[in-house]
Image 1: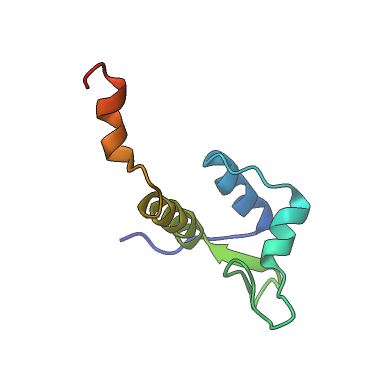
Image 2 (image 1 turned 135 degrees about the vertical axis):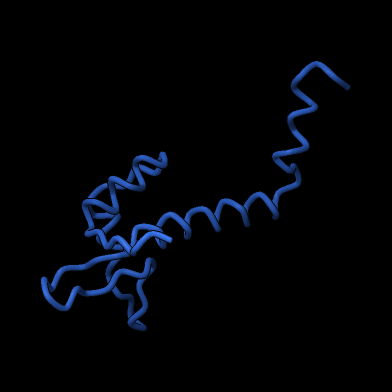
Length: 90
């Protein structure tokens, strides 16, 4: 098991961009800001030493992976069932 790797806002943007999720600076900041109830869209926290927002890299990737898996479960077509439809077999 790897030790946690905490990243800031710009690194989080880079991680998401490497996954094909392009966010601008304003969008990632909004995801890190608490709402009226004190909840953040993504689990960023204030680093007690630097005073900057951080998130654990694996957690960020996991959140998007879980969202994708849930979307696949809730769709009419399952990704595994589509392969037979496009390889010339009926």
